[in-house]
Length: 307
View 1 (cartoon, rainbow, N blue to C red):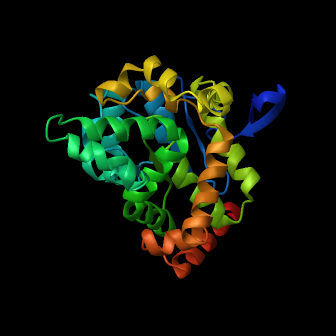
View 2: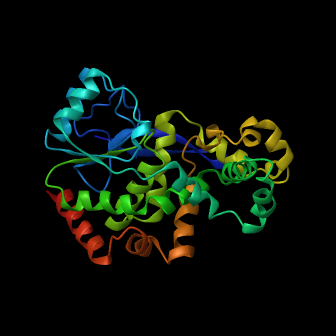
C-alpha cells in the first residue's frame, strides 16, 4: 500500500506528489503520526515516539512487527515520557535496545561548539568571569542560526557510535527492526538516510523521503526553509535576536527546527562529502561501521526486500 502527500516545492509554489509506505496492512496509527516503513526494506520501520500508543494501535503495530521485533530507542532516557497502557504492553513484548544518539547534553553542545569559530568565543569566554552564561548564549544563537544543518551536524558529531550500533542491529536482525526518536525526523531521519544510501538509493530519493516527515507531522517545513533563506533574515542578526527571547537567555527556540526542509538533508550530505569524503567514510571513521559492514548491510537489505 502507498499513501500520498502533497508538498509545496520551495518558493516556486509548485506542488509534487510524494508516495510513502505505512504499515504493510495499510493501517495508519492515529497515536503515532510519523510511522512508516523504510523504503529499502520490508521489515525495517522508522517512527516518532511510541509513548502515547493506544491499546488498539499497540496491538496493530505488534501484529505488524511481531513479538520478536527489535526496537532501537534513539532518545535519551530523560526524553521518554510516562507511557500509556498500550505503549507499556508493546514495549513489554518486544526487544528494546537503548541507542541514544545524544550520550549527554554536554556532548551535544560540544558538537555545536566545534562548529563555532574560536574567535567568536574568545570574548564570551573571558566574559564568563562576570557573566556565567556568556558562552552559552553565543552557542545558542549560532545553533539557532544554523537551523537543521547545525542540528544534524551536532547529532552526527556526538552520535556516531550509536548510529553504527543501530545499523549493526539491522544488519544482524532475524526479525523486524523499528527505530525511533521523539518526532521521528532528525535522529531517525539521519539513520534512515544512511540505510537508504547504503542500499543504493540516489540522493534525490533520500531527500524526498526525509521531507515526508514534515508533512506527516503537520509542520510547514517549506515555509520555514523560505524564511531561513530570506535576505532580510541573513542581514539582520539584531532583528533575529529581538524576536527570540531564547537567544538572550541561553535556552533554545526549538520552533526554528520544525519540519524537514529538503535543503537540510542536501546540505547535510554535502557536509559529509566535504568533511569526510562521503557518507560511507563517515560511517567507517566515526561510527565504526566499516566498508565490509556496509556491504553486509546492503546484502541483508536486498535479501529482505526480495523475500
